[in-house]
Image (tube, rainbow, N blue to C red):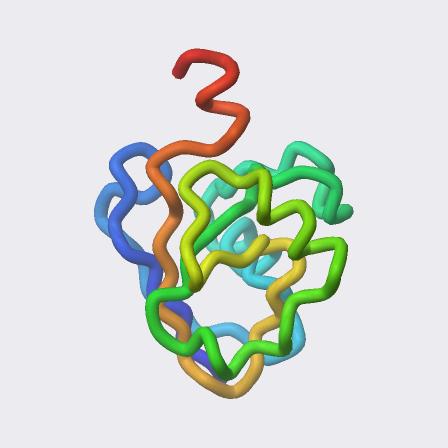
Length: 112
């Protein structure tokens, strides 16, 4: 089992979260299954950036992002070198520390 450690996010998981998941699932699916409501406006089809996350530890253990994911990430709010789309990042055998950005492109455009 691989441990996913979500850092606290003011609205989505104020206390943070730690849970074990089987390798092979996406970070988005693992989060949703464990009560962390990551936005996923395109229903996890790699067509938006609402599930954008930062991989604070374990980034290099993930498979490289594809061209489509990279193109979308260029549009993400608050892009950083350790950014990924959680619907595309598949959990492997390395524990991950994950931070959910304060905003998504949806939140900014909708004036949350």
